[in-house]
Image: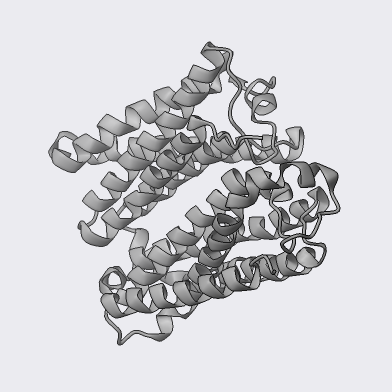
Length: 361
């Protein structure tokens, strides 16, 4: 059995990195230009998602959705139209308008009056609220999730939040809610660090019989999904804190936290989207030991090479979450020192995980 990964999955990760990578613009480019650059990149990613759904439908090709969800059922449901027009057309139109709008605001802001800027903000706010409605449709009405739709919603909500906080009154308003932001941040770390730690212990426990079955895989996905909740809570709180305290962008510990969080998010996506579907086939038995599951026993040799990437990806997830959690305790260290510490922790945990999960003679 050969391992096949759709090229569309790589497109998914490219769009995700394009959309989230704009965060660094607000660290190094003055407000509001940095916000406009972030919004433009998020709009590019959102347009790419909508265009991919449109292209898949036009060519009668199923959306690649290896997480186990039914993307095609979502994008072809009776909720996939608004005012008689397919949502992918709305998405391409909306994000297609945002891209030139915010690029123009970056380089020629004088072309926009204050009322025009407020109009764009209201436009983005309405689109963000509509994205929340679509999330409600997926989670409550359809009870099915589409990773492409989730990414599009994430980009829309990112644009919505950025548009609102780019206005002049945003910092003062954020500072008033400082205790709430700190609570949200620690709640996010509880979900993120807790989910990653629980996944490691569950994985170790499930390997008692040298294999991962479908039920155990579902449990692992469940705790890893806690990491998504935590990641959103922490990144949103960090972003709002940066708006209220612009000097945070100059603190190495804060930058290290953002880097570690983004790596944790990308690694979790790689684990859940690319690697987890094959986890039930990967052999973790001792050399010469037969695996109980006959299906896995017949295909184990084909998936043997995935053992190390799975273990390494898990090590990266938990290392990144713990680094993000403790980085704020080392305010005196430079960014170089923090990155070096992170790399050493990553190498130590990865080596330990590989050693503990190695096939024994």
